[in-house]
Length: 379
Image 1 (cartoon, rainbow, N blue to C red):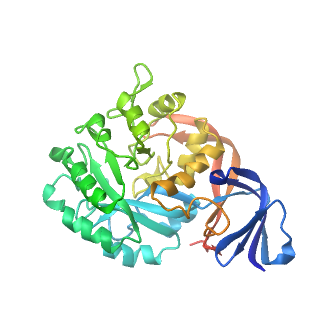
Image 2 (tube, rainbow, N blue to C red; image 1 turned 45 degrees about the vertical axis):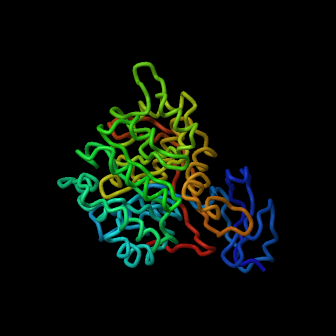
Image 3 (cartoon, helix red, strand yellow; image 1 turned 90 degrees about the vertical axis):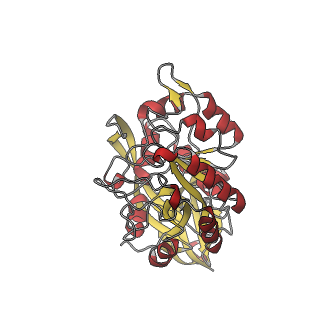
């Protein structure tokens, strides 16, 4: 006897090459069966999802959800429902000094699953607001690789990699040095680095030439400067192509300042689609222009990516990036993490970080969320 039977939703599971109206049966918190029709008498309860889109639980690879412990963080449960997202990957909000607090006060109490990149900087992102902005990697006294390694090992069930932010804003006069330190820690752990890059220095070339197979370049469609393209001749820069060939993962990380349509259009027209689509949601970007994962995904529909591509970049691909093979797909036996969504047709205005607008015909809206076979109550 199944616990729950989800009936008649359009199931899109890119990892398993599935796009069809299907029934999904759930038992003991896992996917038990998927078929065109499953007898409702075999389930304790049923739910009709006709007209809904049913996907593996969406994964937002770049969030900041250390809420009430840092100035940058948003409340994760409310955000997960807004974003139709079951797994939130925190992108280095906490460092070795405060990761235990993040775990005890936020991660363990939140509805969505939260995994995390540990910031190479001891205090994490500690000074972030409209009026106060201090790069946590600008002071090498805050970057102790031994402390970072120790805490990453202590919380290895939750930590999926090391986060580092470099650029004029994030690392200041220290330039590329924080990335070299982060890579050394990540190498010792056997985990990836997620690297933020803002304005130079360091340059795009300095950064991507250091990234290894499986490392993640976030903000990968950022506008000039340090953009991955030459706008003058609409070409992707050679070092970016070489990084993809080497196995570097390209993540959107929209945020408040890191996604531009001019860059995105050159990249997509060149056949360079992002590996992962993420929001970089934080206290400033949640009010726009990023808003959330679903808005960010909808922008890529407006730019011409297919629904299947957009869902893959928000499910199976981020699951691969954080090396969690049980997530991001609906194979039998995997955790029953499911996002139920609605596709709204119309005319929708979408802004990038430079105020440029594109019109989309489809907006993805949230409907309901399930984690481990349990529906999440709305906050």
